[in-house]
Length: 208
Image 1 (tube, rainbow, N blue to C red):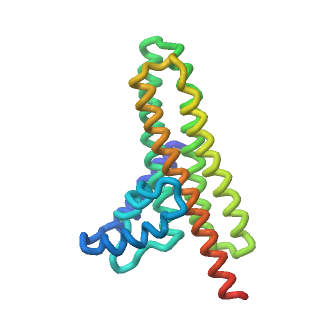
Image 2 (cartoon, rainbow, N blue to C red):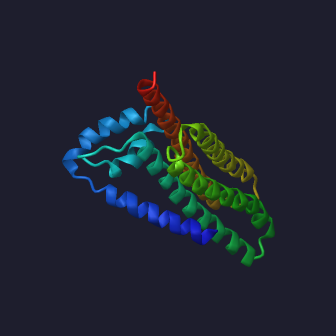
Image 3 (cartoon, helix red, strand yellow):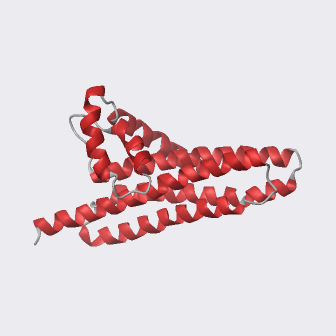
């Protein structure tokens, strides 16, 4: 599963990287567009910062593409966080710091679960619209459930390492990484909701 996840991450980042070759003079128009797209997010500055490298002067990303970029970035952050927590846990285990290691065990499970849910969300988004409108709401429900789960997982880990079993520096590093994943997940969910709302509005106009 880890190999599949890593392969999906690499492929997604490569595709988005190709799409994200931006000329400096196009950034002003792109920024205005993205700021409007990010209005519904809790972390709008982070949202614009995440999306701006992938805005092309000839074709600004659609709401669906924006959600895809946000999800892929969230996956990258979650993957790096997972690797960091796994490294710290192994170090603690090797030095026989069982108390600290046990305090991280739940975080390892949470971030593993979070990575899997983001992967499933990316796959689900790719299928939206391909199998008819009758399945659109089902895909939307799955996405909301999985990304809501990521928010829960990151919050649970951050709350779970508030004790004194883990050193303050290490604790701060872990919390900062999980907070970043949580912020990206929150933005991704908001952008997904914006995409589905725009999709429904478009369908209503075409089929009054």
